[in-house]
Length: 253
Image (cartoon, rainbow, N blue to C red; front, side, top):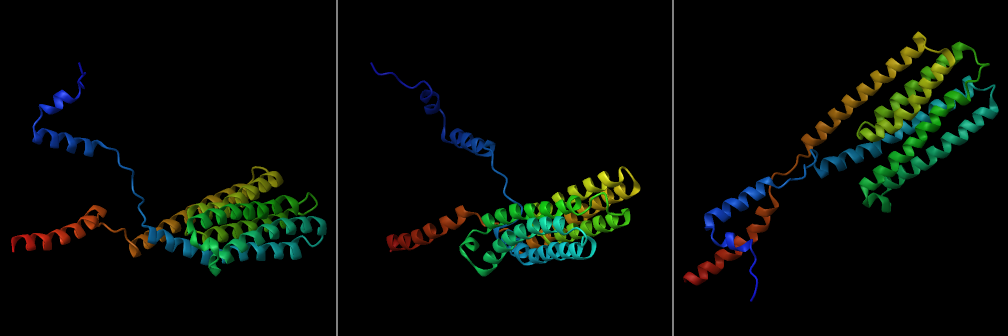
């Protein structure tokens, strides 16, 4: 004697309208993954801006580093050489990723992967730049020179983050490691003084400015490349309807 499925019997007693209402309730109760607010075209446009503007941020890191080595830390050749080796090695790798993407190499076909690689190398550049706050500022340096160096490095980190505002993680990678090192050097050299509090306040204000500018850039990219509202189901059904119409016309004739 065959056993029947106990869950199939109640469904057989339901009407078509009740089955349709159950299917509709199941469809509405299903969790849908939230769609990103920016379209793919808008994100690709922001990646293009990141690759174009990022070179200026890297050049700012290099220029300020060279100025500090030549003008401020000229009496510390060994420390300057170590810092130069750190920052220019990381800059070479970061610029190589950027040039390869702009030149249209193999990585250019994977823009989102390139953005992740570039952001990771940019973190190394910012950390190497911030390490100069400890390498070239020993106790023998007068307080005035320390203040000038830290202020100049803070301006460079802020400018580099601003040039990478098309992608918020990249902007944070360009500014945050260097800012942490600069604030730590200020606290180690002067303690909790108005200068240290000024460095912290300036860093927070710069972070707020970059965040607002990045949000505005994303809004402009979203307005320029909006998301399409055409459902894929409608696109797939259109050829079927167009094919069914000639067949129905031939059947009627």
